Image (cartoon, rainbow, N blue to C red; front, top):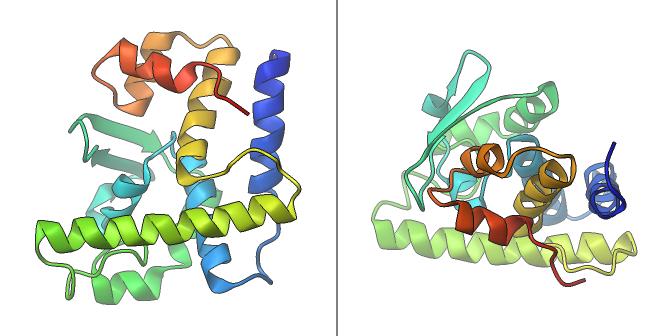
Length: 185
């Protein structure tokens, strides 16, 4: 059973995940997809989502190395996560990336990729704040919140911090503790 703190995080998370954004602006639909995908895939970070290609999917699993720590991550893909990826198949066929963030025809140098990821993350975060406002969620919602919430719910559910650290791709338990400590509301 979840503690009350984990329950609050979980309820907020589910409110966003269960939100119907299909009639919203295209950027809000995309932001919602990114948020849900991150949560479902072990709290994958935005930069790691941006760099996913079809080569990162094998046998129903998402397999990648974190951009920040180069740690290896291997998580099962739920049907919902697969459906989100499927929404962007036409982009992927042309651009080489699973999500419409990077395009291998345009973003070639590391600097171009970094600038594009930063710009898109900002746009997605603005859209997530708009979604949260519409849902009357007072907490600031960003792409980071999906990652943080994934870790917090695991911790509050009694999962060992070492397992959470490994799931997030951290090399240090100290880093993981930052993710799982109570955040300001």
